Length: 242
Image 1 (cartoon, helix red, strand yellow):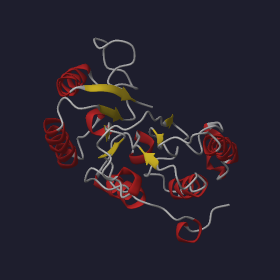
Image 2 (cartoon, one colour; image 1 turned 45 degrees about the horizontal axis):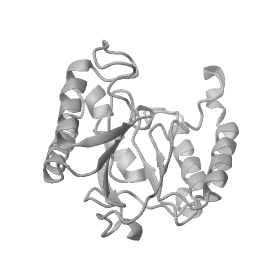
Image 3 (cartoon, helix red, strand yellow; image 1 turned 90 degrees about the vertical axis):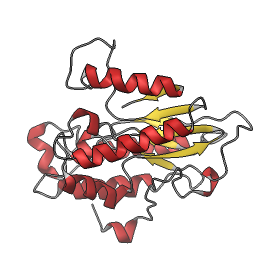
């Protein structure tokens, strides 16, 4: 079912310096015409089967659903400027000792390499991709597979920011990485304050209201209030989460 990544997939990793290495995103800071993009989330290869069966190394249902979606996206006209997977690319966390995480990542890459070459794939880091309590090893493993876990790019006069929301959820073992993202975000928001800015992240700042108490699937309100104020001050118009 799963061959080596090198044999099956030509993969482009994300870079952090306001681009992702794709020609269509270079010199693209001016709006010229309307465009659209597609967002999917939690493709999570390995999730659908009940927990008692998840060691079976069989996530064909998830793969077939992703293949179906990719075929529909490829046949859109005009095609979208890019496709965003807003976190939880796979289900098995990197701490799994059975190697399921690697197998699921390989199949994710194999399936999504069928996306039309004109549609860049933007991967957002989710908690299942680095663990609920990420550490240096899980972050570096993600970066080895997918490139930078936070980055920015321009498209059609809009600055898109991709954040690793797990740094705001639980950064106790990765405080250095979290501080680096925060410094990067502060600098880029200051530099482009007032321009069109959109954010992608996995975990939302809140589920239904900003004053809600901390929930498993959102970020603690003191942190979310601070970050929402920061994003609003810079003129961020939309935050998409998965």
